[in-house]
Amino acid sequence: MQMFKNFLTLCGCHFNFTMEDREMVALRMIRKRTAQGQKVLCLASGGVDSTVCAVLLLKALGPERVVCVHIDHGFMRLRETEEVVAALREAGVSVVVVDARAQFAEATTEMPTRRKCAPYRTGKLCEVTDPEEKRVIIGNTFMSVCDTVIRDLQLDVNNLLLAQGTLRPDLIESGSSYASLTADAIKTHHNDTALVRQLRDAGRIIEPLCDYHKDEVRELGVRLGIPPNLVQRQPFPGPGLAIRVLCSNGTPHKDEFYQSTNEIVKALCRGDTSIELARPLGEALSDLQPASCVLPVRTVGVQGDGRTYAYAVAISTGRFPVEAEWKALSRLALAIPKVAQRVNRVVFMFGLKREDSPHSVTKTTLNPTTLDRLRIADDIVNSTLLKHDLVRRLSQVPVVLIPLGFEEKGQYSVLVRTFVTNDFMTGVPALPGTPLMPLAALEEMVNSLQQLDFLSRVMYDLTAKLPGTTEWE
Image 1: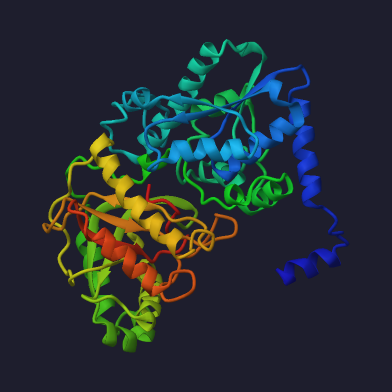
Image 2 (image 1 turned 60 degrees about the vertical axis):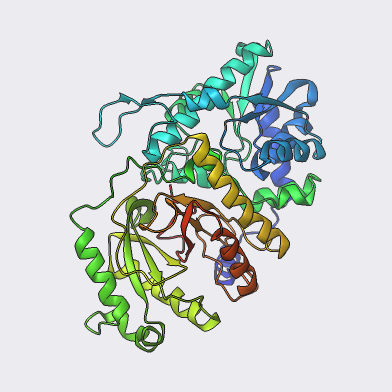
């Protein structure tokens, strides 16, 4: 950072742009875009982005021209909708709650042309398993629900703009031309689907935060007087738990690279000195004696400059690691994707050592029973984080339901993905044994999760971003 500052100073730059300037730029943009007296429909999820967006709109236009709507799509966490509404009202935002759970479950959509694939119609959201289909259905259904809200509230569609709390990273990861003309799409964000882009091109969408990163939005939220519990709230993705359930048709993912990937990873974990990156790990591997297995599911990541759907590797030692062992595991997790190019995530798996990959995958879709299972696991994790005062120390903690039972107790496993970052473009996992994840808190969390009868294994993600993304889908 100091190097950049020195360079900019040498170039004659003056560091006089403040958060007050950011606020004024956003307010001017809102007033300019609504100069014809348009009303604004704001989608308010309760996260910091949409809340800051709503408060900016209210400050710029007043409550008579802003309609804030919270859409319950059926993928919220336990008690989430009630908490969101209370939090928004605390920030001075009056919100209309729309129950659209049935509409989302039954929704289908047209998938756009992409990578030489012709357009096609998806199945129902409650039946599909493809991650990109899930995201596009959810994003487009949000727009469809908005149309219904507009009719129900008798709003003039010709005198109305739709507001979103879209950030710069959302546009970058979606491969939007508004961020880059050459960027690959890492994943489609629900607020940047093809339908949203059409509305944006038509001038129907207003996004006051589209040039901001998360840390800047939080600073702006403080300046706007939004309560600290809302400003520091951990992000929750627009598609909610829908992208934290790894869906599957029941067929293990094993392509032509599966066997060779498994062999490379096992050789590295044995400390095979023919692998250059194994040599510095020799002593640590000798102490750890880690077992490894490739998981037959796909996870999304970024390798090179493009999106990858690749394997995750599970490491196990048969015991709960001590602080020094977590440091060694972290080094191993960094090395594995560099050696095995078809791997973009490495997790530690609690419980008995496991050398064999699972032979079966649980057929999984977005049905109420599956979602309730994830809600229970997610609530255990977040209650433990709250108890140990870790919520504000960690940037985000996705909890993911994995369709693997390992031919043991339960049909599923659960993954805890801690994430520490300033800008959400890159980041690292919280290393167990540090103040970010004390061993006592982690052990309590794992023990509680292991009591759930539908869970086989508990895993802890050790992957940085990059090569992994924040979410698994």
